[in-house]
Image (cartoon, rainbow, N blue to C red):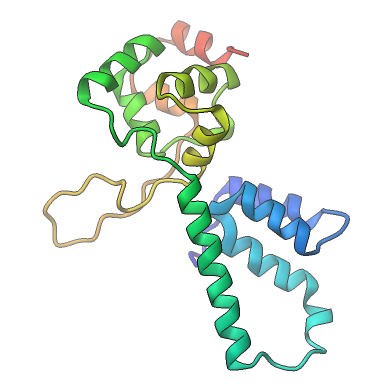
Length: 191
């Protein structure tokens, strides 16, 4: 796991650690809600409940295999639930979405590449964007919360592996896209 944890991940881990009861159901709730932080959540859950686990016998090879199979099934279910809303869109479709949302195409591209911090986007804008890509807000947010991945990073011929790009707030994306201050304020104030 990377040693640097994003502020959003830190907030989720803190909320998890403050739950009144940290048990299987609580962990499953957080894993389903924040699949992109699953490794961190599992590690934290283990750390928080370790005193009761240390008294148990070590896991057998079969136990380890069962756990790995369960995790694999969980990962597959999460991957199956997430539909890439931009997968079948053409460049013309992306232009139309940008026009309908009244933002530059670079902002739409940033959403496509999951470079935006979802919590920083006004709900009304998310609703309009989700509608524009024929998604429910919930499924669109699940897609966005997966974070950018090296596969989503544009690839160029290089001797160096592409790195995961840092996520930005919605306001930072608008500033980078040279959206006027008046338009930014209007977009950011949507409810």
